[in-house]
Length: 212
Image 1 (cartoon, helix red, strand yellow):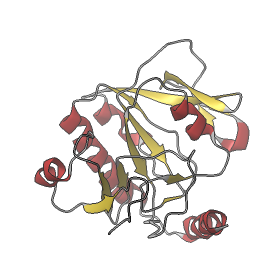
Image 2 (image 1 turned 120 degrees about the vertical axis):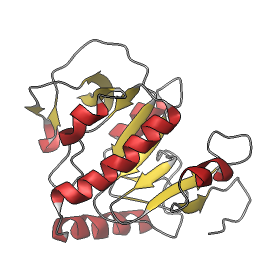
Image 3 (image 1 turned 45 degrees about the vertical axis):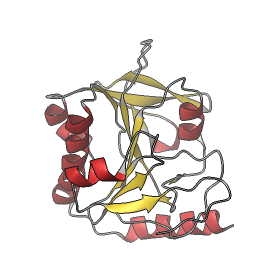
Image 4 (image 1 turned 90 degrees about the vertical axis):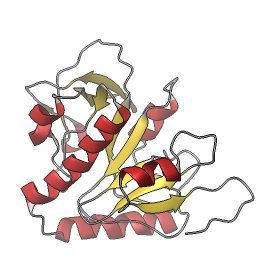
């Protein structure tokens, strides 16, 4: 119930949000681009936005200096990866997609839209589960960056086991990263040297209490 209420509240905020389109989108692009350069990722999944989502597609010529861009394509109840190319076709839920292709691509990093996140940096989406099923079926773990046009961070753990977890959450107002255990990929010390303005989110193991 907490998750459903939080989703509806953030959807309302998104609809009411007055967006300074280029300026706010560029802030998000800039931080995503820093991460692409930092981790030297070459194959990046990006999304074609709905009206209230950050439009990073407009910066694709800048992204292309460091990486090749791909986009999600709805297939049954999950997603597949296709090359980002024109024309875009409107599909279910008013989502624009490139034409289908039959590439088998292993992405290094995914930029994913959200309705909000909770304190474990787990995603609250539209509730259809497309991204959850997509990432669950991957045999590898790319870096995941969550983005949106407002700051919709919940101090509570409101997500479920199947909800995907990211390493970073970027909006025009705040930037978050998740502190992992010492053997995991992203460390607090390493990333703080890269950018000290990020807000820490502590992930928890079972039976441990979260701190923030």
